[in-house]
Structure formats: structure tokens, C-alpha cells
Length: 399
Length: 139
Image (cartoon, rainbow over all chains, first blue to last red; front, top):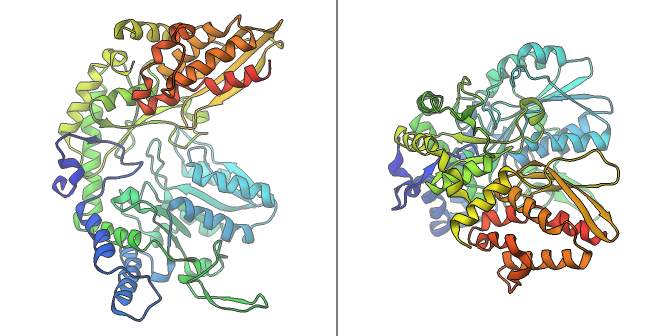
């Protein structure tokens, strides 16, 4: 659907873009909103008293309300703009948890997490002696029983992706949120793969911190969001200090910070990026997230039915209700498969998808990943299936 | 090199690589090679005797280009002195960087002389290279 809005899909050379979990294509409306800022009303935010500066200020601040419509939190000041989900998660770990946790406190994650939800914790463990424990996976997924069993009196944090980026399984976030509340556990959620694809309501789900990136949801690169409950963000120490975030400072070393959200957005923000994110949210809400998700599920069903018929294709997540397909051609290294598909202008991702310790659970180190979005079509899948059916030709193409 | 011949050579070395499989032998020294593109991963072990490379073994998951290049490298380097091995690697690197090189000395490694046309695959052809350089430096 909406293919006419994506200039990249309307070029002479056809493009079959199946790598939406890595980043999505950008509709013309988003690109235009960014170009408008750069060509019609360039100015810094929060600084000047002239017309364009005020216009920028309003355009920038308005995006917090758009994000609110997307994730259903209560206050605009609970939305912090960052450079992306990675930066958001690092802020939570090094600006908040570092000061709230103590030696021996336990953080629960899983082996299916993205590097950005593992490495900050591992580093903090080295710094202050917290303990990282992995919730055991059941057929690669997180069950509420396993979460319950993993909680101990020392568990202080559960940090999970709502939807994982290798298999695309959705975690029982609402139930885990309840458990967290009952046990006074901070609940950190990586929404990078969920916010673009399914309706998210942070209040209902009981999420304390939510991180996600604009570029995986039709927006520009280099911008993302950290949502945090107000009382938690109030206690989050700025990990970046400078202009725009201080109220006053003196030569004696006295610094007074501004209030939320400015306190956590030091320096000139990615104004163009934030404006682009705002337009992307408008676009997604106009189309309807649920409608997009339904479309993705239909495409997955359509693709899976055909891929299953090809004898040498191994599917790893066919029963998971999402728009992702993890697969390999039997006996072929995933990267060779991706290079083969590229020959037919089909873009897929090969590798471990930055989830480098999932292999301990999955018993497969590398996979090819197809991930759909609103503009993908059944005709594109037909082409994929045709090419994969002829895969005995693969080494003629890749070598 | 004739494209069909090239393909056959690479495929043979991918499907039946020389030196594939590590051995339990303390006279070997081990090195790990990770491609920074975050996917291929090879463990390499080697044995030096009387100033020559006596054996090289490798294992791990890697693509057809990486695996075949490692296999052909192994064939080329076994039995070589430090200077001979150095010359092979220097010329191989020069070929991938599109600098002048000695075709004669590279023999089967000439199969990769068009890899520079695919920048994303050049990394694959270079995967074993850094580790092999380290081996030679230690000789």
C-alpha cells in the first residue's frame, strides 16, 4: 500500500526492499518536511525571538505530543529526543541505573536481546558490580513463567525488547509489567521493533522506560526517543552536559539544570530529524498501525506458504505472528544467500543481526532475515519465491 | 581467468576446503579472525617448523569467498619460509587494492583478481589475511 509515496520504489530499476527491521524507506512527505526546515525556516530551537526561531520551537515541541499519540503516555515532558534507541538505552543505564542500583542487584535480560540492550548492562556490571541474569528462553521465546521463576529478591530491573529483531517474537509485556510493579522492579523496554509495527500503550503495559528509533518507522536516521515516567526522568542524571540543558552556572562550579525535558537534551538537538519523526508519526497514524500490522501478517502468511514448499529452505520462525521471516537455504552460508538475492535487486539482511549470543539458544549462528512493511506486496514475494526456487544456480551468481 | 574455471576452483575450495577442521595438538598456535562486517568468523591454527609453515588449519562459519580464499591461501603457504609467505601476501593484497602485483607468484589466488569490482566482497577475500599476516610476523 501507499507505494506512490515512496520515490525510491518508483525508479526505473526495480527495488524489492525486505530489510525493514534494519531501517525503513522514507515517504516523500517525511523528506519534504525535512527539506522545508532546511530551505524555508532554518533556525535554532529554544533560542531566538524572531519568527523563524519561534516557528522552529513550536514545530520541535509539537513532536512530543505526536509521540504521545503514538505511545499513549501522559505528559509531553516525559518524551526525550535522543540520537536513537541505542542512545536512549545508554542514558537509562548510565544516567539512571548507575545511581539507583548497587552491588549485587540483579538485572534480567535474555540472550535474544540486541547488543544495545546487553553491552551497556555488561559495562555497568563491571563498574558497580550489578549481576546480569538471562531469563531462559522456551523454544526461543520468553514465557511469563520463566520470567516469574527468574525473579529473586535481588531483581531490580527487567530489560527486554518488546519484539526481538532476529525472530520477531513479541514478549508478554503487559504481564511482565504487572510483575514488575508487584515486585518493585524497573521495567525497561526496547521498542525499536514494536513501535513501528504494533500499537503500544506505555501506561497500560506498565513500562517505566521505552526506547525507539525514528528510522525504523519511516523517519530519518540519527533521531530517537526515550520515554520515561516523569518521576524516573526527574532522577535521571544527564549523561551529556552543555548548552540548552542548564538554567545557570557560575565559576565556582555551581550548576543548576533546567527542568524536563530540556535537562536531558544538551546541545542543539537534531531539529530536522525530530521534525521528520513528527511527520513520520502523522503518516503512520493516518495509515493506521493496526492496518499496517495486518498487512504484514498477510504477507508473512502468503510468503511462508510458498517458501515451505521449497525443499531446501529452512524457516526458523514461521509460526510467530509478525512480519519477519528468518530463513536459510540448507547448506548455504546466509551471506551468500543475501548476495544471491541482491543480484535480483532483493534486499535482505544476513548475519546474526547484532544478537550475537542468541546463537547459544538457536543453535544457528547466522540467518537471512526478511522483514516487511506497508509498501511490500505479494508480487514482490512471488519474485522472491521464484528466485529461491532456482537457488541451485546460486554459486553461478555469487562466485 | 576463465569465469567457469574460476567458479569451479572457488566452489571446489568452498565445498572441500584444504586445512578445514581444527586439531587437538599443542604444537599448533591458535588465532581467531572476525570480519568487522559482523558475520564471518574463522578460527585459524598453525604450526611452524624449521623456519617454515608446516601446517595451517581453520574452522568456522564463513561465506563462499572467505572460505575458498582461506583454503587456497593455506595451500599456497604450507611449506613456505617467512620471506616467501610474505611475498605471497603482499602481492595478494596489492591485487585486491588494484596496485601492481606479480601474477606468477599468486597462481590460484589470481581467481580473486576481479573481487575489487564488488567492494562488499573484498572484505570476504581479505578475511583470513590479517591472521595470516600475524602468523608470518611471529615466524
